[in-house]
Amino acid sequence: MRRVLPQAFFVGFTGTPVNSNDADTVAIFGDINHTYDIHLTIEDKSVVPIY
Image (cartoon, rainbow, N blue to C red):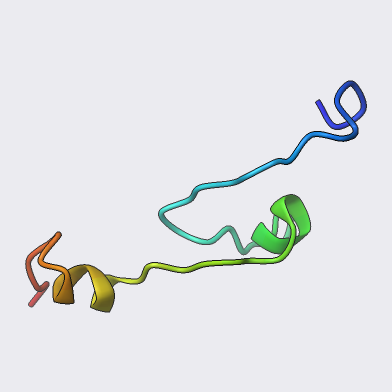
């Protein structure tokens, strides 16, 4: 895709950051520009607390 659409803007959405020996979120998608973590979802009442 990057070769065919070199001027395209690629966005990655992931529930869990990719971080392993063969993959890395930032390496694949570029710099992280926003995070929405579990603490914010609880404050927003989007999810219930995990106990």
